[in-house]
Length: 123
Image (cartoon, rainbow, N blue to C red; front, side, top):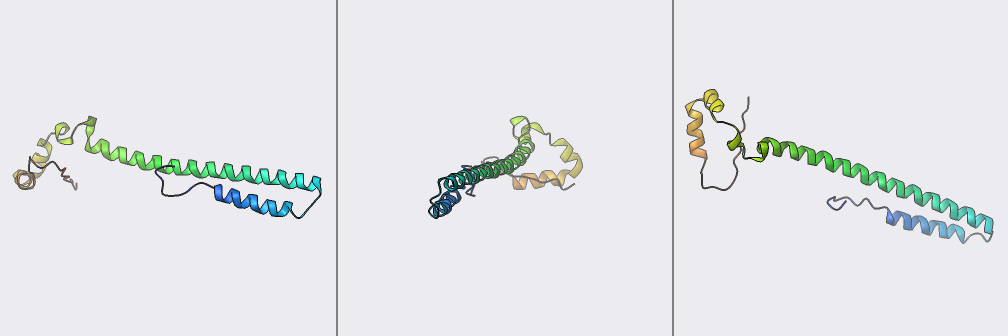
């Protein structure tokens, strides 16, 4: 996965496996045994390739979970793809917290500041 910090490739393990089986092949001159060893190497390589695919699939699933969590937060902060203050009305907050809440907003907010400010309703 290009955005993952984890190397999921098993190429180096496959190369090591090839080297091991080459060493084993050098120990015999029997053509039948060599064919059996080559067949076993192919099986082992195929197993590693399947395992590599499983590793990548699991990593992709983990990324999808993270992306879904980010999407949920984004939907809460930007309902209907609009800024929340354009979507939610301030009247329920005013009724709940009163005039002191409005004073707090006035002291904290600067309409010319391009940064976002998040207020958390603790109830």
